[in-house]
Image 1 (cartoon, helix red, strand yellow):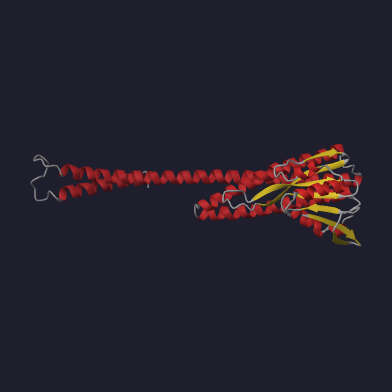
Image 2 (tube, helix red, strand yellow; image 1 turned 45 degrees about the vertical axis):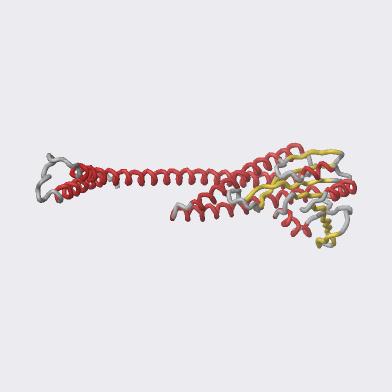
Length: 313
């Protein structure tokens, strides 16, 4: 689906065709006919539109026929039905810059473009470079918000895991760890993209815009550092829980082994007195039934006292 937005008297208005100074936004579902028609109408390479559908597209920029193409990664919730997939993934936002229009292509519905649309009435479509930087700003804000939400979820699952060693909580922590891997990779690529844009001045930024881009680089570095910190904390937490679970398993096995030893010796005594021979002590005594029972109890008590002294229980 193709949307055309124009700022008319300070208000965002959706129009039905491409004009000078409009923002063209492509959102799913996509049709090949729309790509071909839009590429012909706006005179842009159709490969730029098709590349936008690749969810694994890396942040990069290039120019072809005086049309500039920029890709940046943004976070979004994962709508997968697989319970082992990450809670959040990253998807590309592709920005195509022509002489008169800005085109954004989103392979999935994402919050960064929605925020940009909500504040579009404050933008100036004629200042295309600043609009691109504002999209970058919304992407960084999205990362910050999702990272805070991830940290809250992590604390919640850890607290629940302290109370009961639930496999569900461990699985949720693993899904958070996968999300952080996506975030760290995307933030690192985004940071490199912005630094290259600043160094090469690919967009032709003025001094004010370069300062704004530099601020975005700092914010992206901060988000990357937060993601790395959360990843390290989560990795340490999972390692600690793995050690705790292993230690608990060792304690259980030690108790079971001790109980087996305590029971095996009285069973051995009972087995000896159960043999059909004449030379067993007290075999013909009237106390022949009570002797093995008492002996078994005494052996069990002594072994139990010894194990308790050694703190094997």
